[in-house]
Structure formats: C-alpha cells, structure tokens
Image 1 (cartoon, rainbow, N blue to C red):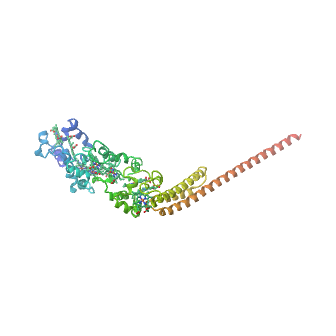
Image 2 (image 1 turned 45 degrees about the horizontal axis):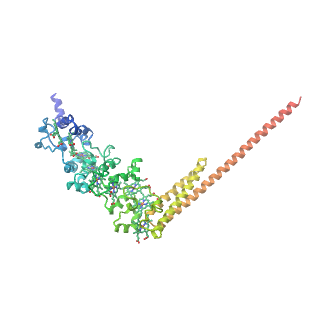
Image 3 (image 1 turned 90 degrees about the vertical axis):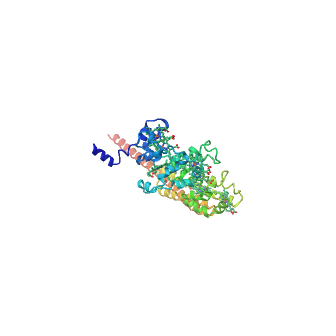
Length: 410
Ligand code: HEC
Ligand code: HEC
Ligand code: HEC
Ligand code: HEC
Ligand code: HEC
Ligand code: HEC
Ligand code: HEC
Ligand code: HEC
Ligand code: HEC
C-alpha cells in the first residue's frame, strides 16, 4: 500500500491532483456549478490545469474558508477589466506556453491592447470584447476545433452577439449591419457553402486580437493580400492617387466592405453602374466604362453561343473534346479581361477580349462542322438502311419468284 502511494506521489498524481474546487463546485448548482460541469471539455483541463490556476486559492483544502481564502491567493471572479491580465499571466509567458506548444504566439495581450476593444476596456468600457467574449470561458477550445467560437465558420456569429445587437451598440456611433451584410457576401458563400477556408471571415480582415477597422490606407492591402493581381493593376491606375488623396478606401469604393457581391458588367454600365456617381456618360470615364462593358459582354455572349453549339454536338455523340478544351482557354481570356477592368483603361481589355473572340469563333466553327458531319452521317445511315432494305426486299421477291416457278412445273 505504501509502495503504491509512493508510485502515485512520484507520478505527481495524488495530493497535487486533488481538486476540492472542482469537487465542491460540481455538487453546487446554477452559476456556481456550471463552470465545473463545462470544464472537462476545456483545453486547460486537458492540459492539466485547475480552477485555481486562474482563480487562485488552495485546491487541497476541504474547507471553503481555507480554499477560497485571500491569504492563499484566492482572487475570486475577475472583474471584466482584469480578464486580459488573468489570461496573459500564462499566454504572455513564452517559457510556459512553449513547453506545451513550441510555435505558439504569445502576443495576444500586446495586440489586444492596441485594438479598439483593448483601448476602450483600459478606459473602463465594459461593453467591448475581452478574451472570454470571443473564446468563451470554462469551455475554451483549441482554435482549430470546429466547436470553438473563434473557428472561421462560427466567428461571424460570435462577433455578431455584440455587433449586430442594436441594444448593445446603442451608445456607439457605428452601424450594426456588418454581420447581416457579410452573410450576403461572396466571401461567406465561399466559406459557408463551399467550405473554402481561404475566404475571409471577420478576423481575417480585422485581425484576431488587434480587432481594428483596417485603416483606410491599408484596405487595399487587406483585399490585396488575397487578390494580388487586382491590387497591382489598381495601384497603377489613375484612381489610386486620387482616391488616396481624397481619403477614399480603394476596393471598397466599388465593392463595399461587408456586402461584397458577385461582380458583373452591371457594375460598369446601366442603372447600377458604380462609375456613374463620379463620371457622367459623356466624360472620359463614362465612355471608358461603357466600352469595357461592351467588350466583356461581347466575349461573354460569343462564348455562350459556342458553348451551346458544342453542347448540341456533344450530346448527339460527336467528338468535340478538343474544341471544349479550347473553350476553357477562351474563358481564361474572359477572366483576364475582368481583372484588366482594374486598370480602368479599355485598351488593356482589348487584347484578352480579341484573343478570346478569335478562339470562340474557331470553336463555334468546330461545333458547326461537327453538326454538318453529324447530318452527313445521318444521311449516310438513312441511305445505307434504305439500300439494305431494298436489297433484302429484292432477294425476298426473287426467292418468291423462283418458288412460284417451281410449283408451276409438274
Ligand atoms: C466546499 C465547497 C467549496 C470549495 C472547496 C470551493 N468553493 Fe468556490 N464557492 C463555493 C460557494 C458555496 C460559493 C458561493 C459563495 C461565495 O462566494 O463564497 C463559491 C464561489 C466561488 C466563486 C465565485 C465568486 C464570485 O464572486 O462570484 C469562484 C470563482 C470560486 N468559488 C472558485 C473556487 C476555487 C478556485 C476553489 C478552489 C481553490 C473553490 N472555489 C473551492 C464553494 C466552494
Ligand atoms: C482559464 C481560466 C479559468 C479557469 C481554468 C477557471 N475559471 Fe472560473 N472564471 C474565469 C473567468 C475569467 C471568470 C469571469 C467570467 C465572467 O466575467 O463572466 C470566471 C468565473 C467563474 C465563476 C463565476 C461565475 C458567474 O457566472 O458569476 C465561478 C463560480 C467559477 N469561475 C468557478 C470556476 C471553477 C469551479 C473552475 C474549475 C472547474 C474554474 N472556474 C476554472 C476563468 C477561469
Ligand atoms: C495557467 C496558465 C493559463 C491561463 C491562466 C490561461 N491559459 Fe490558455 N492555455 C494555457 C496553455 C499552457 C495552453 C496550451 C498551449 C496552447 O495550445 O497554446 C492554453 C491554451 C489556450 C487556448 C487554445 C489555443 C490553441 O492552441 O488553439 C486558448 C484559446 C486559450 N488558452 C485561451 C485562454 C483564455 C481566454 C484565458 C483566460 C480566460 C486563458 N487561456 C488562461 C495556459 C493558460
Ligand atoms: C475579438 C475576438 C477575440 C478576442 C477579444 C481575443 N481573441 Fe484570441 N483569438 C481570436 C481569434 C479569431 C483567433 C484565431 C482563430 C484561428 O486561428 O482561426 C484567436 C486565437 C487565440 C489563441 C491561439 C494562438 C493565436 O494567437 O492564434 C490564443 C492563445 C488566444 N487567442 C488567446 C487570447 C487571449 C489571452 C485574449 C485576451 C488578451 C484573446 N485571445 C482575445 C479572437 C479573439
Ligand atoms: C462583447 C461584445 C463584443 C464582441 C464579442 C466583439 N466586439 Fe467589436 N466592439 C465592441 C464594442 C462595444 C466596440 C466599441 C465601438 C466603438 O468604439 O465605436 C467594438 C469595436 C470594434 C471595432 C472598431 C469599430 C470602430 O470603428 O470604432 C471593430 C473593427 C470590431 N469591434 C470588430 C470586432 C470583431 C471582428 C469581432 C469578432 C472577432 C468583435 N468585434 C467582437 C463589442 C464587441
Ligand atoms: C473582406 C474584409 C472584411 C471582412 C471579412 C469583414 N470586414 Fe469589417 N470592415 C472591413 C473594412 C475594410 C472596414 C472599414 C470600412 C471603412 O473604412 O469605411 C470594416 C469596418 C468594420 C467595422 C467598423 C464599423 C463599420 O461598419 O464601418 C466593424 C465593427 C466591422 N467591420 C466588423 C466586422 C464583423 C463583425 C465582421 C464579420 C461578420 C467583419 N467586419 C468582416 C473589412 C472586412
Ligand atoms: C483571405 C483572403 C481574402 C481577402 C482578404 C479578401 N478576399 Fe475576396 N475572395 C476570396 C476568396 C477565396 C473568394 C472566392 C473566390 C471564388 O469565388 O472562387 C473571394 C471572392 C471575391 C469576389 C468575387 C469574385 C468572383 O469571381 O465572384 C470579390 C469581388 C472579392 N472577393 C473582393 C474582395 C474585396 C473588395 C476585399 C477587401 C475588402 C476582399 N475580397 C478580401 C479571398 C479573399
Ligand atoms: C472603380 C471601381 C472598382 C474598384 C476601385 C475596384 N474594382 Fe473590382 N471590379 C470592378 C468592376 C466594375 C468589376 C466587374 C467586371 C465585370 O465582371 O464586368 C470588378 C470585378 C472584380 C472582381 C471579380 C473578377 C471576376 O473574375 O469576375 C474581383 C475579385 C475584384 N473586382 C476585386 C477588386 C479588388 C481586390 C480591388 C482593390 C484592389 C478592386 N476590385 C477595386 C470595379 C472596381
Ligand atoms: C469615387 C469617384 C470615382 C469612381 C467611383 C470612379 N472614378 Fe474614375 N476617376 C475618378 C477621378 C477623381 C479620376 C481622375 C480625374 C482626373 O484626373 O482628372 C478618375 C479617372 C478615371 C479615368 C481616367 C480618365 C480621366 O477621366 O481622367 C478613367 C478611364 C476612369 N476614371 C474610369 C472609371 C470607371 C470605368 C469607373 C467604374 C468602374 C470609375 N472610373 C469609377 C473618380 C472616380
């Protein structure tokens, strides 16, 4: 028995593993029990930490007067303004954190303090997000866990708990539409419907801990981290210097920030043109937008026409795989033209559009030829079948004649 206890103690279990906080709180109820009930799934419990690692106190004492005594370092329930420090005691300590995960960052508090959330909390504003509003508490998960409130798919609703609440945000001067708008965006569609984790969630643009609105000057940089080609062209365009000088954020002038929808030529010409507010129809910009829309629509329409004829040929059994492959190539020119819009110079669209049109006209001819060939084969079939039928009929008729002649002979 003594031996067993010695082994027990050597393994560091036993006395050290005694946790009167957990034991007692497990049998309480309501708000006092909830932390104990949730704790088994918490990343800290899994890493061997205890209630006392955040709350202080003595987890070996049975008597609550003793275990929760200030003399034993008991801190109680941290006020909201003190929460970042509770977490940072470990998370800013590289020595400790790197024992568990060598590559883990230890700058969360430092970044947080630079954010609007952190600055306002330091000034005593309790309504901003602290560590636990994003990560939860007593049920904190690894960030890659799909159940974690900061997982990219769940993060928008985590931010929305405050940012979409008119009541919570009533005393501030910012809109509460970010979540609703974002949910209509191409980005949320890519993330939620196609599970494309390369599409941005709230924190991709705002930062995980430095949750600030990207500075106007850095917005192009935010979008440009993923849409590199667009940024390059925009930066060389006539708009870059004038937008920058006017303090207008580049990409979002035309695409917005949260409600980014699938672009089309409707953005260039027509009632929904994004150019119209700044350029009237007769101006150089107005003419340029109409010309670019015309070029893109022409290529788009030609490609559709070729698509249709090739599909007819394919579905009637003709071999058109080579033309279909070239069609893919032509569609790349359409993509290039849409990127080239961002030079805001129609001359830059002409080359990809002309190349695309040339291929589209070739693939259309291939489709036409395939249909002519199909008709030729059909005609050949009809003629052959008719010939065979006539031959058979002739044979049958001859045989009958021979048989009739025989029966006449006595
Ligand atoms: C024998 C039972 C018992 C033990 C052991 C115990 N607690 Fe408690 N704890 C309570 C009760 C009852 C309350 C509510 C009354 C109070 O605040 O004193 C409470 C309250 C708390 C609160 C909430 C305080 C607040 O201000 O809302 C925290 C945090 C807490 N305990 C943490 C701990 C920690 C950490 C330990 C271990 C070091 C521990 N408790 C040990 C029974 C216990
Ligand atoms: C990772 C740090 C951490 C650990 C570990 C932790 N807590 Fe807490 N606990 C907190 C923080 C932070 C708060 C304040 C939450 C708030 O303001 O809503 C809190 C709040 C509480 C409260 C008050 C709940 C309320 O709604 O008023 C109780 C009781 C409590 N903890 C008990 C425990 C017990 C029991 C354990 C172990 C099973 C534990 N805590 C483990 C950080 C921790
Ligand atoms: C007693 C030290 C300690 C305290 C206090 C502490 N943590 Fe941790 N925490 C750790 C360690 C160690 C890990 C495991 C290393 C890792 O995965 O980063 C961890 C892991 C995490 C993770 C998972 C990170 C990942 O890998 O995805 C999150 C999130 C986290 N803690 C948040 C918090 C929050 C929020 C608080 C304050 C309420 C807090 N921690 C308080 C030590 C602590
Ligand atoms: C505004 C929301 C928000 C707040 C506030 C917040 N976090 Fe995070 N935290 C995140 C997001 C988002 C991630 C990254 C998730 C991912 O990688 O997909 C993250 C990641 C982490 C990680 C994993 C390592 C890393 O840095 O990527 C730790 C540890 C962590 N947070 C601790 C903290 C601590 C400690 C605080 C308070 C000082 C805090 N967080 C405040 C949203 C928040
Ligand atoms: C607990 C509530 C809460 C949560 C959760 C929260 N925020 Fe906030 N946030 C606020 C409050 C309150 C402000 C202060 C508003 C102000 O100063 O205009 C703020 C400010 C901001 C700002 C600065 C706005 C400005 O222009 O002043 C940004 C950006 C921001 N939050 C993004 C986020 C993101 C992204 C998330 C999720 C990862 C998030 N917040 C989660 C409450 C929250
Ligand atoms: C594709 C990048 C991107 C994503 C994703 C994104 N934002 Fe923003 N957000 C921005 C930009 C850019 C601004 C600054 C707009 C400006 O300067 O006019 C902004 C501004 C804000 C502001 C300041 C107030 C306002 O509306 O102007 C808040 C708060 C905010 N975003 C919260 C969120 C939340 C919450 C989410 C997730 C539901 C989110 N953002 C997703 C880029 C993004
Ligand atoms: C983290 C990377 C990332 C960031 C940052 C980002 N995007 Fe995206 N964006 C994507 C992905 C991924 C898609 C989906 C691509 C697809 O549909 O195949 C996308 C799609 C789009 C589309 C639709 C493209 C199409 O062909 O339908 C537009 C427009 C767009 N983003 C504009 C923006 C703007 C403006 C910003 C900055 C406010 C921005 N993006 C920031 C990754 C990003
Ligand atoms: C002056 C207005 C304007 C600005 C500024 C602008 N765009 Fe566009 N963008 C457009 C128009 C118009 C289209 C639609 C072209 C089409 O499909 O006919 C478009 C299309 C797109 C597409 C989709 C291309 C596709 O293949 O369908 C993406 C992605 C995009 N823009 C990203 C960006 C990024 C990133 C920035 C900032 C660097 C930016 N845009 C700045 C007007 C603008
Ligand atoms: C926010 C206002 C604004 C929007 C929106 C806008 N532009 Fe411009 N654009 C300008 C300004 C300002 C200039 C610089 C005029 C100058 O230098 O005289 C300019 C310059 C141009 C030029 C160079 C010729 C010229 O007039 O100097 C073209 C071409 C152009 N824009 C096309 C477009 C197209 C196409 C769109 C829509 C996709 C668009 N612009 C959207 C403000 C805008």
